[in-house]
Amino acid sequence: MIGGASLRESIAVFEAAYEAGIRYVDVAPLYGLAENVVGDLVHSHRDDFILATKVGIARPKLPGLFSLVRKTLRPVALRLPAVKQFALRQAQALATTGLFHPDQVRSSLEDSLRRLKTEWVDVLLLHEPTTGDMTPELLGELDRLVSSGTVRLLGTGTQEPAERSIRYGDVWQHRYAPGDALPADNLELRVVHGVLRYGLPLLQTAIATRFATASALSSRYGYDFFDSEAHPAILATLALAADPRSVLLVSSRHAARIERCVAQINWSIACGDTPDYVDNVVAFLSSESAAGANAC
Image (cartoon, rainbow, N blue to C red; front, top):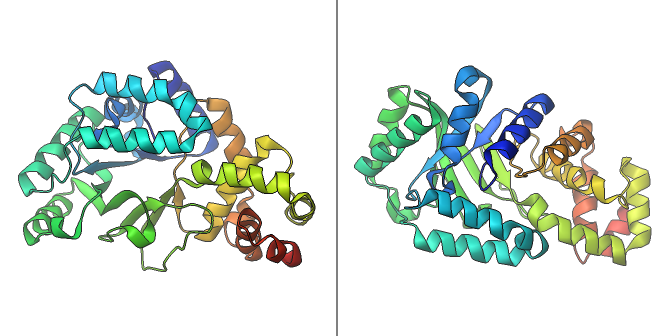
């Protein structure tokens, strides 16, 4: 995800992500100047990337200021995730939402394509839709966008967990915190986000209070649960293993963190070769510490 990083930071993160094998890029009009930055970075090798953008929430009237505010709040948000959620809610409250009339969707997408310097997007998501937004007129317009080749896949995107989100199309983007249910579905693509934001505090608390279980998990799965630099990969592996067909969104302004996280993911576990990993790690992160210890 591209948000409040500077251009220099964005270039460094893009290079690190590309070298690590990451090809999925998630943006939206709400994210300020993100589409402009991505367009400048990928237009010369467009076919190497899967671009996802959104419709339904207006671009901020002062996108540069919006990006600056996000960047300024980030150091606080990293320590206090609740602050980040509050800031996001306030930013969204200032934005115009529910823009799902066919004319609004068409205009928003045309603007995004211009900024992204591309003739098509691989994924178009309805950004925080409600049931009432899913009108026959909207669905007809979306079908036309796919038929024209402007959009390859359609779906929905939300900050909510799966059970509180609207499901439409072939792509379902939603929040995943450790322990959240992942309803089975015949999806072309599931995209999850939030596992690091919600999981890192849980992991740190669990390690501090359940030392023996952390040691047992370290021995069983080859991760050093006491090494804070391994924590993002432990959680990324968890999210991917929960649905091995899914894409995991991560956001960072630091190229080295991206490189380290991807390099440390256990891809065998992430592909579903160790089914008990999800249950044991989720139990460890929850209050069910005894279950986690017994399972190990």
